[in-house]
Image (cartoon, rainbow, N blue to C red; front, side):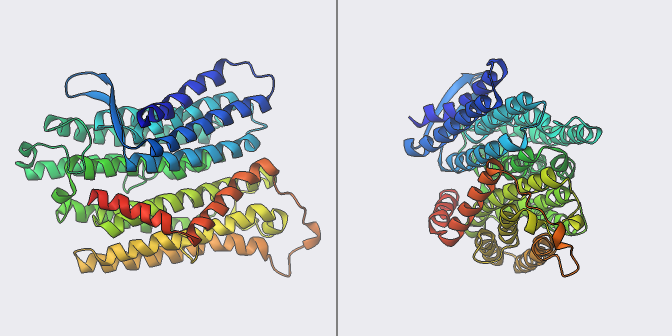
Length: 489
């Protein structure tokens, strides 16, 4: 039955988007209820996949070796449940955030469609299917980036599109090459390449490297990373939340499938390509952290932070050991939760005050207590302060780095993670500290209680409490991450 649930996870939001176009809702409230039902049904379908177990099925055979096919395994279920959960809560938040927007229908049409193709990515059984949905994700999420249709938003949308197409073109080179030497059409932990592919080792390594750089674009991997800092600040905050929390993880997912399920980890381990990718991931961590520290526009600061934090995940993957890979999966969850909360809180602050610069936010914690408490908790998680979730994932990542075959790289990576944590504290903590403790010279009599309503508080609060609960009782999630790592290694 899991294949039916997987198909529903793709079809329900896509078909639901057409309902949002053609149905004549008498009020925004009824339209929002419809959107909520579609999002909840999609999330339920992803959960049912976990109950149904592994399965695979072909939807369409283009040729004997090119098929559009779906497969349900532990990795796809992990990413689907995570993605649908964030998408559902960001959607609920959007009901308040978008309430005064004149173009709500367009937003929700593309919002639902994008979720459908994301599930198409994670349930893809081969690279051909994954690539089709991956390209569709770019085209369908592009309107979310430029939704406001200001000059800056249109420019950001164009940049997002150009970078995404460059990345996709690089990935397509690898897909053509891999299919030419494919021994099977379905992802396999041992890889799917025939013996002939490994005869020209240098060519295969070069093609693999190009492919990872291409998919790494969506994950914010240097050098194709700068679209994030253009797209995130211009998109509506619900879109920013899923762009950072979920869509960047689709680049991560594609890299995992290519590395472990197409080429095979044994071929990559110890080669120049592994060392180069580790260096690029570390460069992304450092670049994102340093520039975020020097950036004062709140959403742009969070965008640079995403480059750094998602690169923690990439570093865990490229280290190619069980501990680091488990840490990468943990970071997917904890970063997705924390960054979604931060972008929602940023949207609430901007909506209520019009303030976008962190230097103008003194006393904001007194005015918007619930919102800023969520912001503070998410900040502590990103920094990696115990007992918050980021401490768990980053602790495991340090252990994975220290167990790397090259002790020098392991020590450098560990030191860089510590340095990045200090920068993260430097660019996030002052927002909360100045917000709650503006100083004796602050004019307290001018303070007003201006926090957002229930609908915009609900999702950040739920995600914050969920993040704290998982961090305090992490054993189930750690066990799941370790099990997935064991399946691969």
